[in-house]
Image (cartoon, rainbow, N blue to C red; front, top):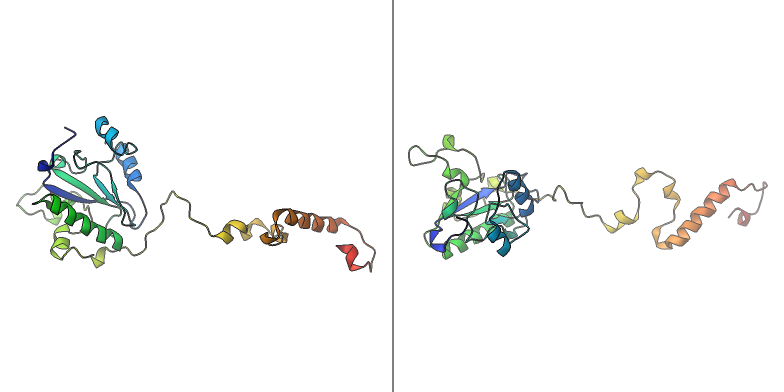
Amino acid sequence: MSVRGPSSITLLVIHCSASPNGCAHTEVDIDRWHAARGFKRAAVNIGHHAPHLKHIGYHFVIRVSGVVRVGRRLGEVGAHALGHNSCSIGTCLIGTDRFTAAQWQILRSHVESLCRDYPGLKVVGHRDLSPDANGDVARHEWLKTCPGFDVAAWMAGGMAPLSDHLCEVPHPHPTLPRKRGRETRRFPPPSWGTAIATFPPPHRGRARAGAHYDRRLASRHRRLPPGAPHAQRQ
């Protein structure tokens, strides 16, 4: 069954994307990763929401900037926690075990909002759903470390950012070009050679720059008698 009612939602599962900490991956990247794993949303749900995300298993993705993107709708059964998908919401933090201050702040607001909308909602980390032998999932019972931090301890501490799991500086997306400054676009890099350095500064205009360069090339081949006036050499 691909759809469900609000009364069936009793669990919020927090995940990590298992990508480099601080690297600005997005829900589109996760959709591609889930496609490779064989995940697929029902056609009826794709038609109503996010048609460009045909495979993503999470309901929410929190980017390193703190922006929250919706993957699957809350009324749509997710694909993120085997055996618990029908009753759970899946929220994924971009990163592995260190997250930006913006992510921690938004995660707190996100959890508080969902707990208000779904009274009695239980909040756990993905690893807390590992098979348990004695009523308490211990470290040696984890099938994975996701989301990279202790969700129960985080909530008991008032949902404040965990200093040991804080990523200060977000890195740009690995597949996107870096933004270059105005000077970088207008001046060629030094590795292009010294010949290009003979161009005058860009503010003289493109046509004038070309004429100046042509005159300098021509002067190299012009034979002038010794002691010729300086004006003749220009």
